[in-house]
Image 1 (cartoon, rainbow, N blue to C red):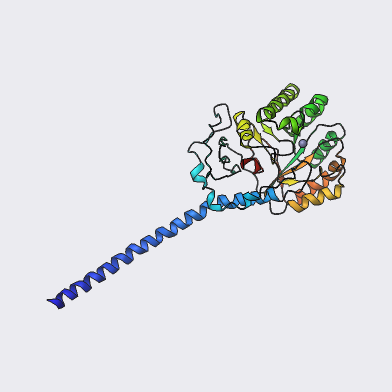
Image 2 (cartoon, helix red, strand yellow):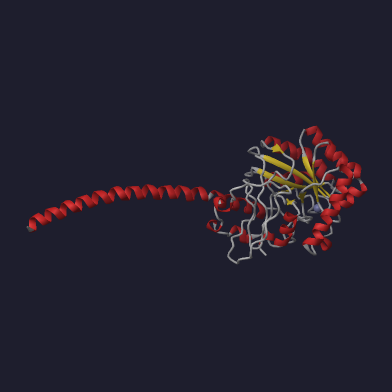
Length: 346
Ligand SMILES: [Zn+2]
């Protein structure tokens, strides 16, 4: 009886062992699938930290605030950034009038900060931030966006346009309303040559611009009217004088998004605003030191009457970028913005 029972138990044990090993092997497979999924999810944080480190390497220049660059972003643990799938709405919408800005969510202290548009169009996220989903164009594997701020000026704009034409590349001009007022024909020349046109405020006066989001937008609108009067377009792309770092907080982004503007900082600086006269060789070296390792670069330069060394350096800068295999693009609302993350931190 006992012996028979023992045999029955042994048989049952063998059966159980076999069943559980089959079951467990299924579980292991399941676990490895989950591991692959979570690995795929880490592509977002790794991109984020790469971009964040780009922001940190921006050299000092008067056009870049000298305050602390957002170190805290570098310390953000990857797992605090939710995977794309958690943020991407099922319906992608364009930046048309049918796509109003969402209402800002309540500012929860634990909301993870994700300060960049993904190339897939997922908007940045941070407490109190509400920016619309965008659709961006596909880009070549390496692309450079040359940008010139503060113009137009008769001393520099025609020379820059000539170089761009000779080299067969395009750039984007973030123009000032007061300069457009003085030199409308130079804005026309930029536009007629197919260069990108962006809005850089009317006055460039930090004291006036950064009193409030409303004050900032008012100058953007003022400049937009001047641009519209001159070339008949209303650019949606904006660059904040001095960049957003140290100037913007969340409400600036919300106000700009609500008015359907996109804001562009930069991730490579020529350093031409670091002093009144920076030798052309130095400008070329500055760019050569920041470009390696980056696949999409937005380069800050100035189109300002006194910045003649920028024009002198421009052919060499373009040659260098061509040698490195970069295509040249024009900024439009279809190009994912490069943003400093500082304004999302409160
Ligand atoms: Zn400027």
